[in-house]
Image (tube, rainbow, N blue to C red; front, top):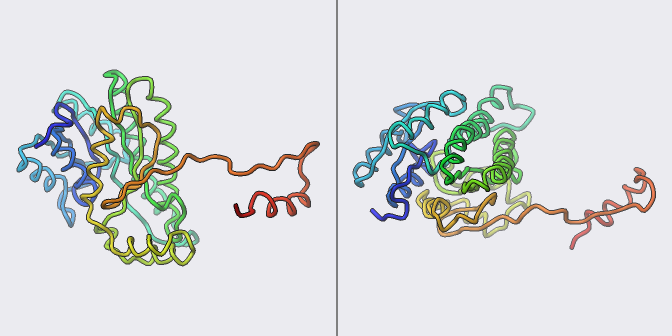
Length: 292
């Protein structure tokens, strides 16, 4: 194994299979000790023990931990497991999550609670407990998983809400922890997984709506393997990435991109008083929504 992360302790939620497993293996490959988390054992496609065995076969040090990170106390015990077994926690990758497919009018409260709890609350829970440790040791890397759905996708409103929330959480946490030698960034992966085998109707709809280009559509209907996510996550966890904070990256196979910072694109100002509805009917299309 290489040693870019030798002496570091990492925890990856949702790392029994897919992208989470690929990230865990990449971190272990650079010398990090790992805590592997999954919801429960025996899940199709692999679980925490499956990933742990692969890391042990690599000569690494690893502890599997089962539990639902949407539960605040379970998340606390998960973070504590890193301390109990390895003495510290340096790297937290919030990767766990689930999804529900339905147009908004068919979404149930249970759908919302399950998806937002798994992604957004789970990310908050683990970050809340890990950040206090990292603050005290004055070093840490928090890396959160978002999705293309935060940019808007039909049929997955709860998932998109959770993933957009993670972007906002990431940017705020980054400001909280910056002075303590801790960074917080987000990654938007795209890879072939059990949840995304390729060629989905969601991707087709995004193309038909003009959200993605033909080139991107053709890329997304045949996704690359999850292993492409590993190297960038490792990089964000290194000392060399200490100045990168509050940013969102796209990672897919051999593609890595960074999202622009949100800015006000255009502004209209009325010299005296507030805008009337009639004035806005005229000015918004002409100025704010004008191309270019």
